Length: 224
Image 1: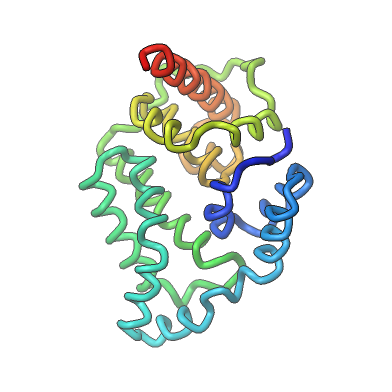
Image 2: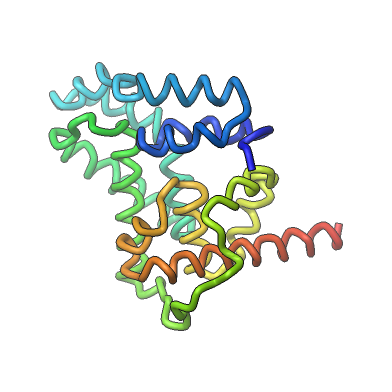
């Protein structure tokens, strides 16, 4: 389904790698969205380059400016994965500290936001693993016929704030896979590598998570 009527997707686009920006384009029938994808795919590398270059020299003011630009978006990534505010805040601070320590390794092969998000996601997942809160023991690798790779574009029609709220009620495995795939732009092969599960398990978790979300939203609609 084309990505029409989905203006809330636009802010998240700058955190996607160029290959995924270009992958999205054929599914968009919105002139504005297509134009933004073109601009991001062409120019995204240099958006904050002067600021990043100052951070490389240890400029504290530049670090604060870069933190201010990305903190909210990265906190949202954390909270969707760990589902606890205090833990998310700690992970956010540690992620920025790591990013500023390793900023010399950033080679502009992706946007700074995408590079930073990788650090945030890995730290969030590692936190859950250390706390033994990330469990997939009850998940099998059977094929789930409900899952179709390209059916996910229909999900852009969901009311995003309602979905975010419903996600907090999902089991950890469902919530994390749904967040990484639908909201953070990872594919199932990447999710499988990050979480240490199989690709088919990731697909199954994602499909079941969508069903749970739909059920939760229907219950709220009936209750309201």
